[in-house]
Image 1: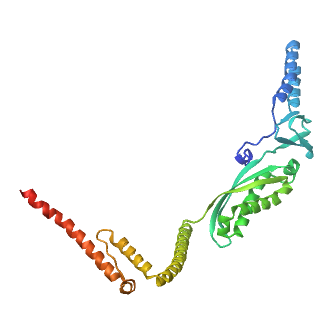
Image 2: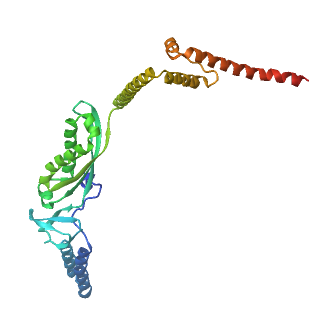
Length: 319
């Protein structure tokens, strides 16, 4: 005899509830006839009342059933569907009626994935997602599909592969909300005939090959460098326009041009050991020859005076 543990565990990881569905009412229904029969046997010294009481108690114990607040019991009579029962206490006819299944109507989460699935631009990706769904019609869930929990799981996985196969990698990475909405609609269309509705679908992770990640990183870096160079070029254009306007003002005002030249020399030579390279044309047009000579002479005088101070203090130290 083969034993399959998947028959005892549902898609959410909880044990399935199988008949007989024992409860406190069933226990009372069993104990009352059994105790009466045993008491009669003890008083009459006849084992028949005890046997009858136990058998009757066992039969009565099959009748009361209790469905939890979120459950519906599917009742079959001689193999035919007669209705849904629950939540709460309900009764069935022993050996004639049977509760074939218990339908959980709470929102259920199911994890599913698509591994090594090719996108529309032939990139293999692994996608993990979570499905939130619930049973809105227990009758269809019990009668229209053999195992609605396994069916919804397989439907979600095939729908995810279908969506990935007609979506490019860039859309898959940037348009998750649109893909999740489309995936929810596709799964819901497949599961509605089973009495199951999809509340939402959330993609947890999209894994791409490591080599492609490196290539995308280099591409992003090149794009950022390109953007930086474009911004720098635009700044150069704006600066050139400002220089053009400044040159027009300096052309009509030689005094302002000389003041600007003096300011440039000051900024360049105020640091010790500074070196300035000035085009010869600028020396002629801006009159920088005399200014640079005076600035160089002043710089030399300051340097000589600083060098003479240690020499002057040396004889004093010798005395």
